[in-house]
Image 1 (tube, rainbow, N blue to C red):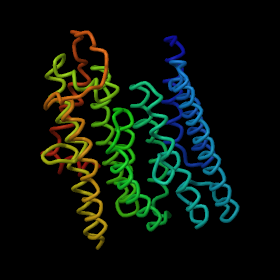
Image 2 (image 1 turned 90 degrees about the vertical axis):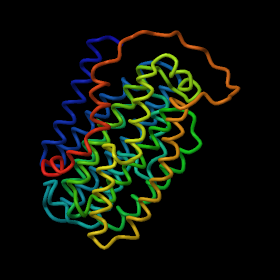
Image 3 (image 1 turned 180 degrees about the vertical axis):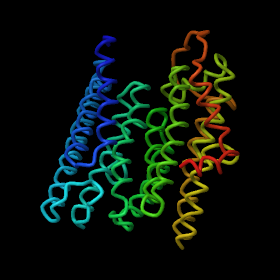
Length: 346
């Protein structure tokens, strides 16, 4: 892709996100979401492969439907209350429609079907943007409207997302699809705590973004798109494969790694809200995700299992590892001891 064109698309992404984050009016927030959608489409379809074009088409249709529902919810609320302010969303029907629309934008169950397919058709770096940066504006809108949202609807969607995200990722062999189901599962944890402690949702999102960026950039460095390619990477970049193991375990939420912090805080808050059965269900469902993270880690580092898959042996590249990967991996594994400081900042 032309560097000037890429610069324009990245700038538009930043502009759209900034407009949505800084807006008080629903129309401005909607405009930011639309700019974001239009800017990411060329980045998804830049390879001109039929799979990439299909992914871009699916993404456009889903995001256009969700944007229409956001506009419809805000107009219904303005019609009933006379308010266009984002924080003044009080009409019950508008709250339900808006929750569904933002769940569709994020990929929460039952609106998750598009996300694995779109991620599978995108390059790894675009997949990273779709999993992190593109989810930030909708999560911010949910954060701003959290006092008005229906807790039963959000809790139901959260439990379903954690269950399906873990369950459907078990049988995958493509790393991008595994990361897509991982994202759906993490979104379930964010949606669960949104009504009770919205700041915890943002903390979970920030740490998820950090760890996911480390995993995607590592996969991009070793050019691993499926498990059979991942099995041969330990011969090329042993140190990077070892750090990938730790990063994946952190994403699974194992102590004493960074990923344990949001799960710990969320379970603690749910217990305070007398939702111990819900907290227990969420903790048990995270074991499903742990299984496929361990599977990825097993293929990447622990051993080379016997397999009959025909795949090309890649050249041993002595490309130096990016400094950003080293920094992200360090932060993805070692932030738990300073969790009291992180909690006071957030």
